[in-house]
Image (cartoon, rainbow, N blue to C red; front, side):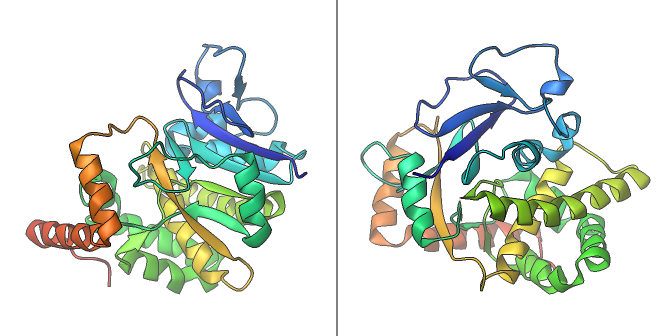
Length: 276
């Protein structure tokens, strides 16, 4: 059986997932004197960018996996509050993807990524970092044009799309992580340098860029990657009346349509235009 190591990244102590194949990775651990103790892997060990975590978010964990995990055929990254599930909208307890699931799925597919969601303008970063701040988009496009010009049109199509995969979650074979990370971090390090040069390096804005880049990378590599899109569950999401209404609407096949209409109306009201 293939070795599977899926890392739930966190910046604080939490009730860890007791699921076969999962480990907990303390990201940004170099920035604190607090030792989380047994059960937590500190990302300042080995080759790391732990001190960059405030800007790179969960990508400091992905970098650590890339550089330091060499004993697993399948690796993954999730958040301490978000994990891949077989079906998010269900009346029953959702089934979180475990070690056996990952092996089974990756026997047929090459990579597991978050199901595409509508760009929700209630997410402050979407407005601030993508639609209203043209300099951010143009700077990222310039970096990609200089380093990986074949991805420029794909990146533009991601900016213009109604939906995309968010959160930088991934489960795949280690060699795919190696290829993706070599491409990604070359771009992100240069993007960071140019942000510093114009005094625009701020919390999370490198990590957000990675979400756009991930989607562009998936577009350009369809022939070599068979992609499995899966639901992502917010572990502590309250399962009240609103949630179960979404379950019903999802089963009727109209939840996605209603979300799209809601977002377009909000964007029109806010005067937000997608990059052309």
